[in-house]
Length: 635
Image 1 (tube, rainbow, N blue to C red):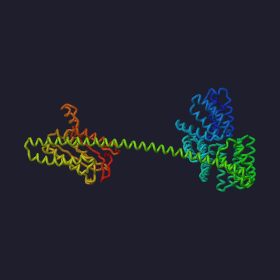
Image 2 (cartoon, helix red, strand yellow):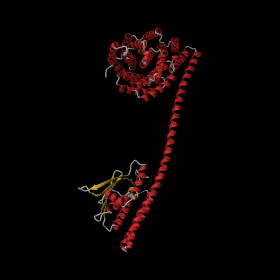
Image 3 (cartoon, rainbow, N blue to C red):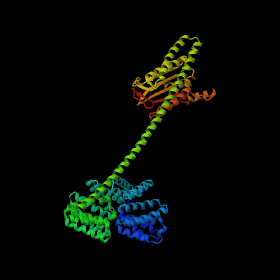
Image 4 (cartoon, helix red, strand yellow):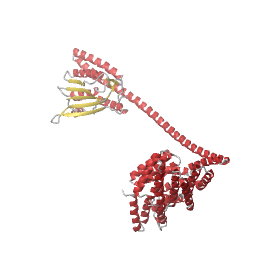
């Protein structure tokens, strides 16, 4: 990335050789960068640009030139002129639908309001355009507006000032323009000093000065040097502070910017005051006031007068202090900031009391208290508004939570009802099949098998009826029911069915809980649709293992496979689907509805070396619960 002074040099060369058509574009781009280096040169270029014939025919450059003119006016603290230029820029931008240029113009309006004594207007417009800039997502525009809002919040809200300043710092890094990073670091230094973090202020000011020095941002280098000198005073290093101020004043006079010379002069006076060289301080304050009057800069006249008044107050020359505080108030006029007004009123109250003018002391005390109460009222209103907004937000969130809970409760009740209905359907389904088997034994007059089958069936029926009343059962009970069921099915197959239930050693079948009768339908499908169509060698393996909070159930058969089973069902006519499969699909859906840990099922069609079906493997993953702790996925 090129340094600022390199960019300025290149643009200066381009401006000297460009065509008249390109001049507005190049001149605007140069002024945007030159503003950090030489504001007087910038002001001259902008003034010339606005007088070019036909500038109004290119609205975008006309708006940008007027916006730069507003900025130049503010460099000399001329808010009235700055507002006029900014208003013109805004009108042209709005007329020509130049949305970004309009926001830049409004940003200059905010600055002119701030220094023109219109703080409420500055806050309102500043926050409005800040919101608009965030929506547009133009980083450079957003940086410019955030930088302005740092100045705005400096007047009344240091918390917001700090937040916005650090956001702007991150944007400057994204832009890769180191001089902008230096500028916002400089503002963070002021913020740190305002909240009493003197050491941090020193760090930021020194970093800003180094960045300005590296980039060749001469004017801001001077500003940072004068401010850094005050930080050195805080550390008791007055000699180096004075040396810095001398260098800054020489540089300012070489640059020829009247306002910067005034500011640097009274800052130099402050350094001497802190070093207790009061005569040098007085001389420099008076020089700054004289120069400010000569250049009709009432704002800097008021600032220098305030510093001189403070000096006389320290020296206990009360009459002189009163005189210069009054002159400062007069110089500020309507542009005085509310905090400056309050501070001066407080000083005058004490000073008039010391010289025995109690009437004046009382008047300024009332003025001070009135302003202080207004600021407190504003703070209370802001806090009350904030609390009201938080209350309304929490109220809406509470109502939404209550509504959500009611909806979930309704869904839960509906799910429980549907699950009970499905379980109620599944039980008669199995009972019907079992009764058919018993009936066949009776027809064949096979009393022994009929008696054995009926005993097992009665026991299984009692278990099913009992399990139907519970949402979850122990794995031990589920295994007992499955074993009885398979024994009954083996009898129905005339013992031509081999089954094995394998349980991992680590499983505690009594403490593990799972939804009742969840596994049986898959075993039923393996028998009915896979093994039933084989004449012999019917094998079924069921294995149980634990993986984390999930029970892994593998149901492995050597039947004819799902594809062949579907083909055979199709030849029978109709669109046959397993009742157990449909019922369990619905049950899975309901169990999984309000859970992050869901029940899963995976089918694998097994084939031999020739690609012929040799059975089906079904793997169930079932979230379970342990010793009464609810498992995920339970309704």
